[in-house]
Image (cartoon, rainbow, N blue to C red):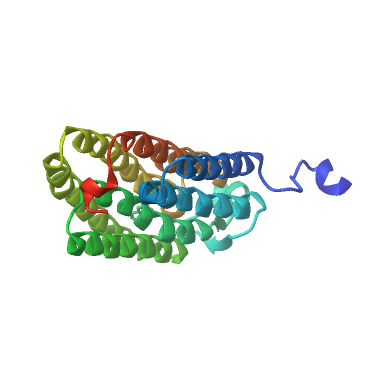
Length: 248
Ligand code: RET
C-alpha cells in the first residue's frame, strides 16, 4: 500500500520480531530433531525445551504481525513530550501469555535436572505464575498502583531465585558432579537473565521510559538467551546423564 510506504510505516509488522520468530522456530526443530536421535525415555528435556521455543515462536509471530497488543494510557506525560511520546503505549499482552506457559516449563527443566521433591517443584511453579500474572495486571493498570503489582512480582522472583540457588543447587550437587555442573550453568544463566526482566518491565510497561522499539530489542535479546541459548546449554549438559538417575 503506497500510502503507508510514503510515510515509512511498515505494512508487515516488524523485521526484528520476525527474526526472533525465525530463530525460535529453527530452535524448536533442532531440539525435536536431537530428541529423535535418542530413545523415547531419553527425550524428556528435548520435549520440554522444544515446547518452550515453540510457544515463543507463536508469540513472536503475533508481535511481528503487529498483533497481541493493546494501547494503555501512560501514567505521566510531560506536556512537552506528549506529541512525540503519545498519551498511551503499545502493551504486548501476548508476551505474558507466552511467559505464563514457558516460564513454568523453564523451571521444570531446571527442577527435573536437580530432582527436587515434587512439592518444591509445584510451589515454585505456582509462585512463578503469580509473578507473571502480577506483571500482566501491572502492565494493564494506568495508575501508580501498577508498582504495587510490580513489587508482588519481584517478591515472587526473589523466592524463585532462592529456591534455585539453595534447594536446587544442593539437590543437583548430590546427584554427581555432571548434574551439578549442568544445573550450575543453566541455573546461573537463568538467575542472571530473570533479574533483567523486571528491569526491562520497569523502563517499558512500568515507567514508559524507552520506546516500544527499544523494548522489542531488550526483551528480544533476553528471550533469545533465556530460551534457545538456555535450551541448548541444558540439552548439551544432559548429554552424558541418564534420566533414570534423576528418577525420570
Ligand atoms: C515481570 C514484572 C513483575 C515483576 C517481575 C517480572 C519478571 C518476569 C520474568 C520473566 C521471565 C521471562 C522469561 C521468558 C522466556 O523467554 C513479570 C516482568 C519479577 C522473570 C524467562
